Length: 331
Image 1 (cartoon, rainbow, N blue to C red):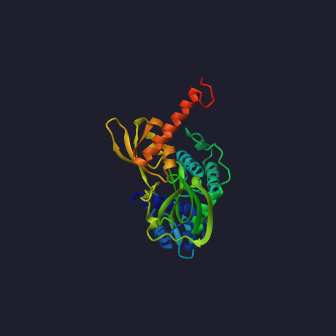
Image 2 (tube, one colour):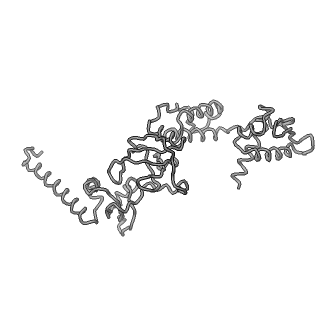
């Protein structure tokens, strides 16, 4: 409730200077410019009519002449200028806008850069005096990637998308048609949330893993209720894939932040027991071997055998090198 009241208060305080600068606007035109309905606008005008300077006599209250056809301010009670951002507010807004422009697909870069320039110009030297201000940094004017452009265009036009996508959990590239819902930012990465027609479910697609995105002429038609899914699960547990059970040493706990692992148990020494879906044993074998002694495979048995076999082959090759059997002299 308080948030809605603060929004309305800001709108009311800006309406008087707005109508002073735009006398004679119709209620329909003004409502469109202010982003509210005509009925909300008329309610606001009736509220303003009862506001003014202390004393609140007839000569102190804001005076308006308004109807559906025309709106004019005849007495402003001193509210002649629109609200202005403080230097701290301007800096915070600039930081947020710059952050958004660095995330592919989140906003139209040209629109964001235009807004940054206008805020910097309006804020002037005041925002430059705020400690930690970043307004002096140049805007990132690199062209937007074709994939991010296609995603934003499809969302705006409500069209379906054809994607070529690399799935890290499957270690595979697939072609799929999706119905875009929205873009979201999670852990410094941009994702497209969409209904995947082949998986028949809501999925998140990381934009930097989309190899190709083509906007189709067919409309985007996510099933009813799909737009309400705001859980933003980055990894969806596909029960059709085999599942590895791993023991992760405390020194390697960081890998849970980078791979789709599910924590199952914590052992007395701090080791973590996790599960992870994988597409092929070969890919999972390479992944676990890359962590060395930091990750131990607990199951399934075929994955354990694959890891043990590859590790034995690597040790044998190393012994051959060290013994000179491969023709390479040991140091």
